[in-house]
Image 1 (cartoon, rainbow, N blue to C red):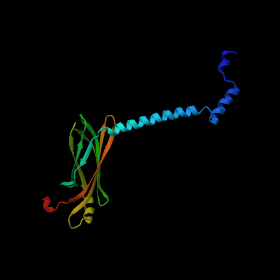
Image 2: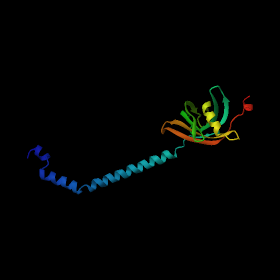
Image 3: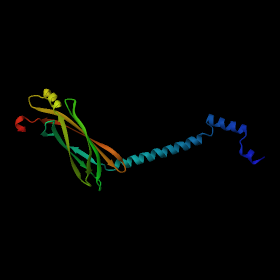
Image 4: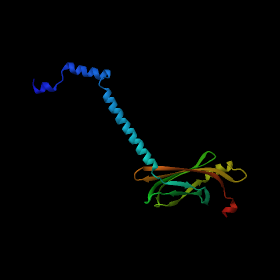
Length: 187
């Protein structure tokens, strides 16, 4: 027999191998091996997820909304966002996004791109100005009662970029009641 013929499989052997695979004979070992590998991969994923969950992450708190000022274009409200950094190096803040709602309506929303850095091992206070156009104020006045205040919800997202974890957003929400200034307060 030549070397080329020795390496070739005979047709009856090939047919027997195909029959064994299609009927499940001889495939049990392969299935067991795949099951063992899949089990190891699942355990590794669980281990990594557990370790990442235990890594301390920055957190934030949101102050109530208060009246800041009046201009010809809008009324400016503001709130403070305190961001705490547990790490020994400063962290960049990618952006702050906000939505200010009252009476189920979105009054103002926006993005504050690149507000700066969170100080290393400390807390950074960020001022979040919210500009409310007068046309929204006029629609809110219809909803005001005799107490001259509005109920509000402020939703803020602080997006931070961590080197190992990547970008993630800390969602914050505060609700309250804000007294609108009277003419005596303005002048």
